[in-house]
Length: 285
Ligand code: NAP
Image (cartoon, rainbow, N blue to C red):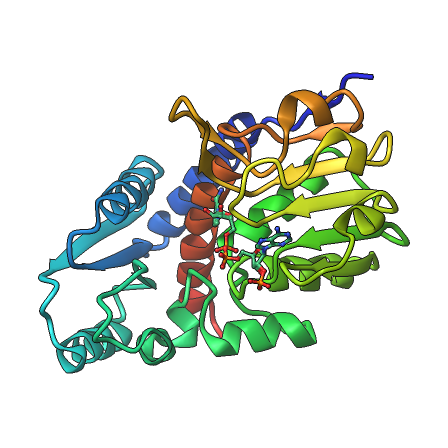
C-alpha cells in the first residue's frame, strides 16, 4: 500500500489566497491588518523564521514589521515595548520570536502580550480558551495539522488518535483540538512505556518529538493517517521529520511529507490568526 500525500504546500497556498481575499475585504472597510514581530538577539534560525513571517504577511496583504533588538536588551525594556504595542490600535498581532535570551523570563514575556493580539496562541489565556472550548487563538502548528485533516475530509469522531510529544506549543494543544472533535486521544512522551503498543492502535498518529525515526512502519496500523510535525536533519544534512517516511508510507493511508507538510501550514496559520485578530478588533461588539 502507498499512502496518499497530504500536500502542505498546496493547502497553504489555498489558505494564503483566502487570507488575501479576506484582507482585501477588511482594507475596503479601512482596516489594514498588521503584525508586529519582535526578535531579540541574533539566533540564525530565528532570523530565517522572522523573515518568512514578515514576507508571508506582506505577500498576502498584511502589514508586518520586524523589530530587532540586541541580545542585551533588558527584560523591562522588552515588556515596555510589548505594552506599547498592546495599546496601539493599528497593531493586531504581536509575536515575540522564541527563544529569547536567557536573562529574560519567557513566560512573563508571553503573558505580557495582550491575549487579543496573541497570534502565536502561546498566552496562558489562549491555552485556557482552547482547553475549555472558548474562542481564542490556536497555536499555529497544531491548528495547521487540523486544517490538513479537514482538507482530506477526515472524520475524527470516535477515532483513536495518538499524539507523540507533550509540549505546550504542539503536543498538548494538538491533543485538545483532536479531543474537541471527539477523537479518543492518547498523549505519549519520553516516559511512555512501549510507544508501539499505543501507535499500533491508532487511526491517527501525530508525531511531534524532534527525533528521527520515532515512528517506523512496524508501529503503524495499516491505513492510518500520519502527521509528521518533526523537523530534524538526516545524515546528509537534509531536512526530515520524526517519521521514517519511506517505510511508513507503505503502511499508512495518508501521510504528510517533510519538507512540504506541516511547516508551510504553520506559516499559513499565523496569517490566519493575524487576520482573525484584525477582524475581531474591527467588528462591532
Ligand atoms: P519539545 O518541546 O522538545 O517536545 C518534544 C516532546 O517529545 C516532549 O514532550 C518529549 O517528551 C517527547 N519525546 C522526546 N523523546 C521521545 C521519545 N523517544 N518518544 C516519545 N516522545 C518523546 O518539541 P516541540 O517544540 O513540541 O517540537 C517537536 C518537533 O516539532 C521538533 O522537531 C520541532 O522542530 C518541530 N516543530 C515543527 C514545526 C513546524 O512548523 N513543522 C513547528 C513546531 C515544532 P518529554 O515531555 O517527556 O520530554
